[in-house]
Image (cartoon, rainbow, N blue to C red; front, side):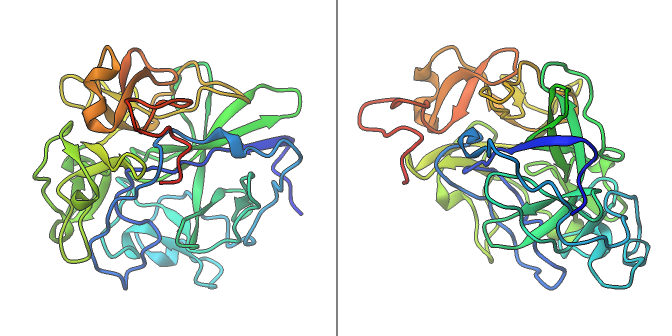
Length: 336
């Protein structure tokens, strides 16, 4: 089993609520409108970290090591001819999804629970979706205590938080995978528009227009269906049955793509093994509503708290960990 350099330990953080846009697992044959995901809490669950020695080997084999490389056709990525590595702009039904088209693996063996595993000869992380479909996306890395830029993603592609890595004798570092990243149409390839709600470059014919503004309350009815587009990117809690509309942003962008009164939050965990005291520039985030106390957030299915590494308090999705936001509302551990 190939190991990743001197990497001695890897932790994974799982998120049970996301505001994911188009399902990155959807192949070109699927032309339907994709919907957002829902769950119990938008805060990453750090309790699933494997404190032993997780499998850090390469899962799914070496498919030419092209994961993360810029591309314009599938042939540039599928150098082995096995049909696994493809180019985002030549494979997804919705379009490139990335501002800068990139090679990725359309399959890889999923990691063991509580660990993250490399793929394509260590060029990417194998990402396991709820549908059971896996993808090999390029790796990116960043510090837990500094605002310096994340490294590993090409061009304007965004680094999405995935977990922690630690080299022998070194500090913990954040790690993520490259996906999406646009905040304006100008970021996207020709023939595309930026679905700003999700930070994804989609073909003009696949683009939809939100009818609800960032910050408005929303429920599962706003997520859309295969025949009806969403009304917004609704981040919500199943337990609470409500949430609020938000949109993609990148930490550290100046000016921020978030509306006035909102802060870009990467939703980083603030617990062990390495609490994030700063958020790296370029991390994928969502626009969270500024607040001073819970009363401003309860109606939105949220609570008022400062996110890890963030400059101020915002309405965090779901219930306050360890207790209800208001009477009769369960905490984030509820199964919904």
